[in-house]
Each structure stands twice: as structure tokens, then as C-alpha cells.
Length: 86
Image (cartoon, rainbow, N blue to C red; front, side, top):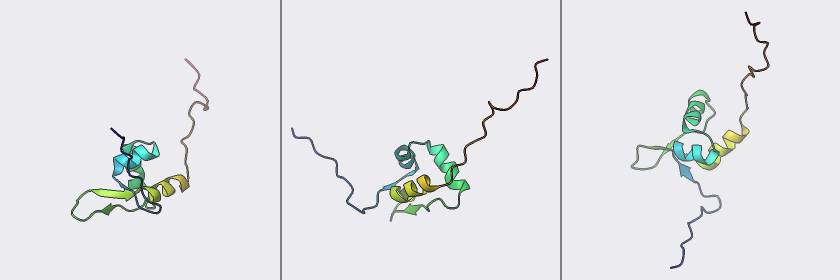
């Protein structure tokens, strides 16, 4: 039986995904992406397909936002002086 190839998105076609799909595509957790969405007003807006109540995002626009955002790494606590032992 011949294998069927998965359809690939056409050049310039939008690939709409829910939050879980976005997180998987970006290699982060859904919770982290949701927190980022809530905290950063620059996060791309969600859309709703006709007849649906679920929010979806365009992968291309979210990927561009995610890769272009300012990274703010946490402070390294292992480099701080530790209090003397009693």
C-alpha cells in the first residue's frame, strides 16, 4: 500500500494552532507560553475561526514574536555569596 504524504502548507499560507500546538512547535511549555501571552501586550492576538469558540494563533507571527522578543534571563543565585555557616 503506498504511503500518503502529509499535506504541506502552501507558501504564504497561514498555519493556525491552539496554545498547545504553539508550545510544541516552539519547544516550550503551554504554561510558559500562556504566562508570556498574559504578561506581554506585544504577544500576537488570538483569532477565532467561524463557528468556533477556541482561540488560535498564526504560527508564523507567534514564532516571529517569540524569536524577536527581548530575553530577560533570571539572576544566577549560585554566584552570590553564601552566609557563613554557624
